[in-house]
Amino acid sequence: MWNEIESAPREELEKIQLRRLQDTCQRVYHLVPFYKKKFDELGIKPADVRSLEDLKRLPFTTKQDLRDHYPFGLFTVPMDQVVRIHSSSGTTGKPTVVGYTKHDMEVWIEVMARTLSMVDVGPGDVVHNAYGYGLFTGGLGFHYGAEKVGAAVVPSSGGFTKRQLLLMKDFGATILACTPSFALHLAEVAKEEGYELKKDFKIRAGFFGAEPASQGLREELKEQWGLIYCEAYGLSEIIGPGVAAGCPYGNLHIFEDHFIPEVIDSETGEVLPDGEEGELVFTTVTKQALPIIRYRTKDVTVLHREPCKCGRTLTVMESVKGRADDMLIVNGVNVFPSQVEHVLTKVEGTTPNYVIVLDKKGVLDKLEVWVEVDDKTFADGIGALEALKARLQQEMLNDLYINVKIKLVEPKTLERSMGKAKRIIDKRDAEGLKK
Image (cartoon, rainbow, N blue to C red; front, side, top):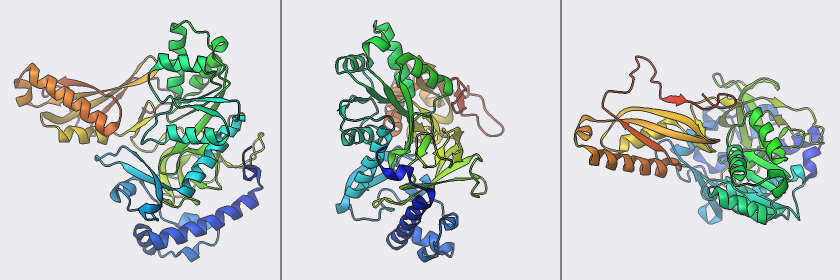
């Protein structure tokens, strides 16, 4: 394994966690007015954190808090110390923004090196990185981690499936990093192009994340590619990919010397014991630019702390079972119905009535939005409708970062509800996916 801390006795690990937690509390209390106010409202001072048990007394942080302090209101360092900025799409047009100091980048690269070391990725390996590059953290996270362990990186990003297959074959890729649905799509197109997966490719392991994957999909990827399936878990607000990684025994280990996990009851906020299902919460204890106290991920999981056969003593989280909110995951991109609604409210010619339809095209997700037009636009004829459709598709791409198919429907044709409006029709395979 990359770092001996991964197999340290729990007592040693918890001492490190406590010291780092105390330092982080001091940092946010004195440098971030938001946290000082939160701590003061609860009657807590940083000096009151004397044990890890005191973590549960600290305030929660939510995604909305990041949006409310857009763009840099929760940073603890001046901008001349920030060397990287990433962001994700927001529900009201403003993204959530995360920043990294040089130290934060070193932490990120370290945990990504640990991730890749789960299957001994190193010199001689060729990592085909098909995660998206840009403002999202996936592509660059894996890129720098792979370079750290000495592997060669092919920064292919997403799309261009046939070209990716050509590069994977000709460059001798041994490691595949992408969403599970894209890996399956690659397999399907490869067969259509006449490739024999296990003969023409050298892929020995894959790092898959950014979206749910059923056990059936995992087994299919293992069988088709003949690879070791490693799950990669992360979220931008905590650091990006590298929060937890799957070992060859199928356990998803949290790098808890950097990120302290809890599971809570979503309704009450009460901390639940190991083995009980609830909402995952993280506290970062080594980040400088954007340290976060008790961040509510909305991911539903279970924690276990028994040592693993791989030798790691790090806490194990089960694969995320669902969401504690209404977020959808479409080809690895987080999408909230409220984001769609926000776009519609900006574009003249539509009504507030819409339906989101999720389906599959092959193994890839397809998102379509049915939108009612208003009476005036409908009466203006085909030209006006085509212009409205084109603008909506462009605005969706700008705000959601994904291509959305728009279907315009006549006024007053979508079903009304006397209670909570049914906004989502999910036609995808129910197993392992959000309904």
